[in-house]
Length: 458
Ligand code: FAD
Image (tube, rainbow, N blue to C red; front, side, top):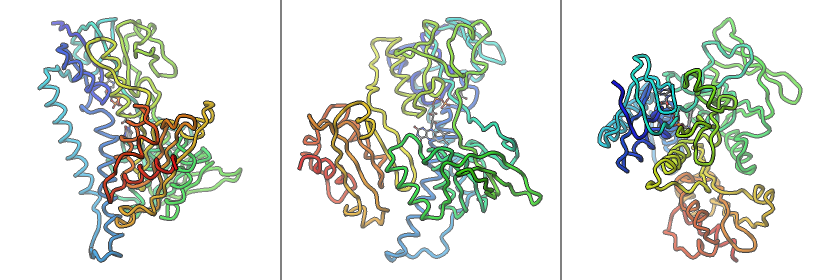
């Protein structure tokens, strides 16, 4: 029997389930269709599993450092098998939490693959159960992409999802791709004692990030023994007679070989629009290379059908998917408030952590804005020194004429927790003077924010 809803959401990732919960708050009859586990990429094979690993391996590194401060830890070791079990338990616990939240909000959860068969009709496969809705939200996410080169289908070549299922630490890991995912895995495996090589085709790791941050991270990770090659194009992967692998790459027009026990392919993700539409709906939904196209209200070319998150491309992050979902919900149901989409934070959970929001000085310059940058080096920050953190820095970019804060780039301990304060300053159009006037507690990492702001007004 057909069921009718105000909103039917396809995909229970951070774009989908959070929007369903949001709509249900306004009393909307809502359903979510999920073909795998609730939580999507973020919970099952993305943000949460990787940060669970990074938490433990980071502690391991920190504890080893404190030997110099008198904390002796003979026999300290990490068991990958137990670490993976812990990761699975964290994921399981959070999945159960989402299911409880959905049930408490009276959001119906359908298990199956949603196929959009009409403007208001979705079929849940394989049973072909039909659900209709005033509005449909597509939040089907993305999947790992691969390079079109020989050897990428060999069993020793893993994507990030498969890598998170590994129970052993290889002695040599080659990571193809020095983006956020590649560098976070490099941090984990380097801390676990594995010889890591990163091969990045662009001229810097973390392409798209502030230049100084990329250069510093490369330097710090090289110092820890990670072999990083930029401008390195991988041409093939080959299995050797002894069961190991060889990754062939070109750097400065010369060909090299990197041996590996395992290879991680971290070369990006592609939208998961395949199979999402019936044939006639596929013709009506505008797409570009698999990416569903939307307008500023997140509405597709078919009125009443919206799309958010990794499926529409753009900034592919969990909090962006959620924020876009809120925007879409507020476009469908005007009683719901949207989000301020002008400031989007992006974080990298390497050591030191990296967090950015708003404009870099280069971006502001390209936009024709005259800026000044306040910089604070964390090697003089008490909390940084006493907790034995690596050298790091905070940069605050402000408009020269007005002092308005336009952006911030942080590379230091707790950067990912501190960026929220700077985001608020950017979005509320605060000036460096406003920020410098705030009393920061001592000793804390966030004293650095006050100091960087102070350096802009003196
Ligand atoms: P997804 O989370 O991919 O969810 C889509 C859901 O839809 C899935 O559950 C899928 O099974 C389901 N689905 C697909 N098609 C159908 C269908 N036809 N019917 C029913 N269900 C369907 N982002 C951050 O912000 N911070 C991080 O630290 C971070 N770390 C990451 C680490 C890794 C290794 C990876 C891979 C990603 C990371 N991301 C991170 C990115 C983040 O996970 C994604 O941007 C986010 O999950 C996208 O949310 P979404 O709702 O658009 O899609």
